Image (tube, rainbow, N blue to C red):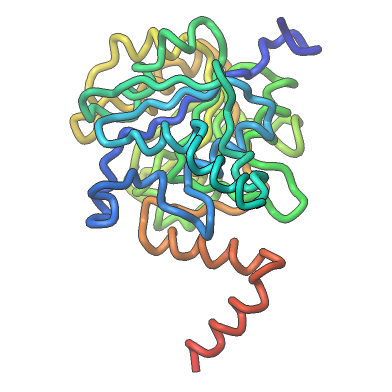
Length: 300
C-alpha cells in the first residue's frame, strides 16, 4: 500500500519510554514519568492522541522495568469500568485509553544504552516500513483549532517522502543543550515550508552551531535507520545516539525539517512540566477562568 504520491504510509509509531525519570524523584520511584498527569491526562496519553490524529494505527512502546502502569493504562480496566457502569457514570472519559487488540506492542530495553538503542529494540516489529518516533517528554501542543505536530509532519511526508524531523527555533545561547540541524534550501510542502537537512550536530558549542533550529522530539524515519543502528558505535554520554545514526544517512537519503506550528514544552524538566500544566489548564473551558483567578490571588 502506498499514498497517492507513491510513498509508503506512516502506520507505526515508536514511543521510547524506558527512562528512569530521575529528575522527578521521588515521584517517579514507583510511577513511570510518562504517567505523570498534565491536568488530568498522563503525558504518554497526549503523545498517543497526537499519533492517532495523524492516522497512525500501530503503537510500539519500548519499556523497561517498573513501567507496567503504561501497559495497564492502555488496557481494559474491568473492575473500574464495571463499577462506573453500575453507578451510571459515562465511560467516555476512558475512550482515549483504548488502543484495541493488536494495535499496541511492548518491547523491553534491558539496558539504558541511549535513544538509538531504544529505537533499535523495536526493529522486529517495525519491519521494513517507515515509522514515526515520539519522545513523550517533548510535549508538542498544537494551537487551539490547529493540527498536531505529527499530523503536520505526515502531510509533509506524503508530499516529499524520505526522512523528516520536527524542529523549532530557540535563542542561540540555548543550542548547546540540543541536537541542531545544518539547514539547506527551503522547499514547499505540507502546511508550510520545509527545510532540507544537510547535517546534524548533537549539543554543539554555541559558536560552532550551524543554526538555531533544534530537533524537537518527533521523527519520521525510513527503516534503513535500523541497519545503521545495528552497527552504531557509542557516542555522547557513552550511549548509542539516534542523531549519530541519522547523520550517517544524510547524503544517501533525503532529510527534511518541519518547523512545528505550535508550542513545545520540555516536560523532562520540572519547570517545563509546570508550564505545560498551567498552559493547558488556562485553555480549558471548564477551568481556565478559575485558574486565572487563582494565579492573580497567588501573585498578590
